[in-house]
Image 1: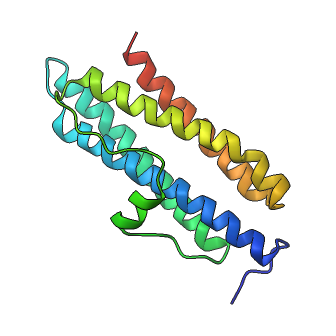
Image 2: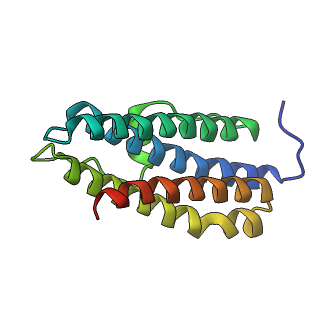
Length: 157
C-alpha cells in the first residue's frame, strides 16, 4: 500500500532517490571510519581506536535512520555494496600510512562533503518536492555531521 501523506507520488520517488544517495554516502563513510578504527597505528593508537569506534557507531545509527526514512515514504532502501558505490559521491581511498592524523583528515573531508551536499538539498526537498519532513530530517542530519566534523577537526589543531 502506498503512503497517503500529502506528497505527490512522483515527488516521493524523487525524494526517495535523493535519500538513497545520502544513504550510500553514509555507508561509504561508515566503512571508511571502520577501516580507520581497525587499522590506525601509532603512539595515539588507543585513543584514536576508541574515537573512531564512537564515530562509526553514530554513523551506523544514521544509516539505519536514513534507510527507515526511505521506507517510511514507500520506497525500498538500497542494500548492496554495488548500489552504494554507484550512488555515492564519496571515493574509496587507500591510505599509504595508517596514522590517526591521516585518517582524521580524510574522514573530515568526507563529512564536510556530506554537509555541503545536505545543505544544498534542504530547500530542494521543501520547495521542489513539497516534503518539509524530509527537509527537516536532513537539516538535523547536517547538524549531526557538523558536530562529528568538529570532533574530527579538533584533533588536527
